[in-house]
Length: 375
Image (tube, rainbow, N blue to C red; front, side, top):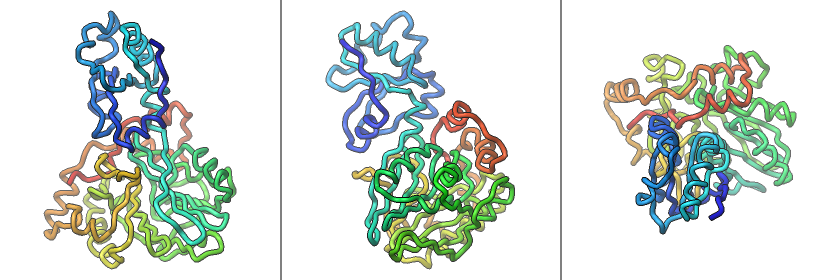
């Protein structure tokens, strides 16, 4: 049987469409336990590659014959070799092209709404839980919270025939490397960053302050900056076209943002509560919340998007319904998951203080999203 290479985009479609897939993950047990391809419709088996060096005969009975089979490893080589062993045993099998490093980098664009003479797109990074956005109108575009895979955004804008005019980061990211500044440099766009998060950056930027309005195209698309500290001291939300709330890492669909990635959880927990329980309560409950991350696959809708009405989150999101302030403080400071891999190095990179090469950037970002408080 011939072995096939399956692209990350093909796996992503199976995730979104909830199709069956059996994954044999041949990474070490600790790597698999920390982070894997997530889908409620997939089945999994983890057998480290070194246990299969003498052959795959012992696992053949545990692999279903009626499901599509994909072998996964970190970089590709090990999974390809195991896939070839399985093919020699008569199995129809694929391996993940580029391994988990490629899965971590794949972006799936999804249209989330119409704008006056334009559209709003969400770029879903399924392997990392990151969400980026592009607002398009009358030949112009703005990008919010871009990842380091800058060509995806630039090529998407070219395909749409629009010019990237503005690039924003809602805050100084600590879990992934921002591509915002690089996109601005490549396209001549203005790069915006909240000044309270930019005290240590070593590059020029446009200060994003509360009440800032940036016009995209000739239509009335205003991107209104809403100061919303808590995840970081400078965290800023956006209300686009009075319909969409881009909440950054302050509010997610099933959880709320963690305030500790700069080492100041006790200092910022009050800001986080003020944003969620006061500032956001003053907004229309009909706003569609579009966060910068998702934590679990249950937050991904059937169309592949991550979005929900603010009013629904006020009802269902546990982090928005803790009346006792002391209990809220305990939740936010005592119930935190492990910090993101290399988060200090990622912050230094996003400040412009260090410039790691591509291999180092991939290594720094490996692992799951960990921006949320565990509710």
